[in-house]
Image 1: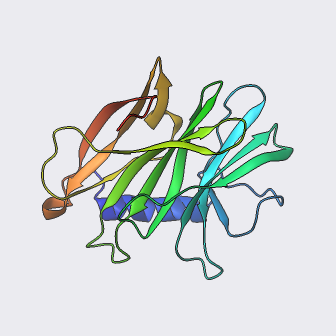
Image 2: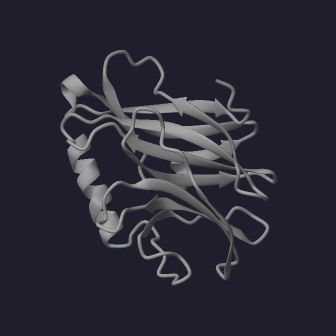
Length: 191
């Protein structure tokens, strides 16, 4: 069982070693780290990740719609979730009209004090314009906690009219005891 710190170190190692599907596509800026690049139908790929400052700090979530790995149709800089100083887009699923992106944001630079907060962002599939956002929380959790969703399409998916999110959370008072969670988010993203 990984501790949250061990999970974050694994995340860092995966990103550094390109295991999350980081693109070597020269059409993307060099300060973009990709976390996922799933096919979303119609010969399109949804690229999600983070853009950093020139010094590699202060991640800002980004999404790209790509046609058959040959050209970028649009790109979008996503808003940071409230109360976060940096965030990354880590998962993406598509419907015929909408792309749903999972954003994981950090509340503080000091990891031992920081919480990771989750948000779903709905983007217009044609234009990339943000249509809606919704903060999500593990069900039945009280007290200060941190949440995360690991890599893999199975952790953020669309089923019927819902998005299914599976991940882990840990109370800040007991970070070494993470618990699994699963929740449904209606695709309408009503608050």
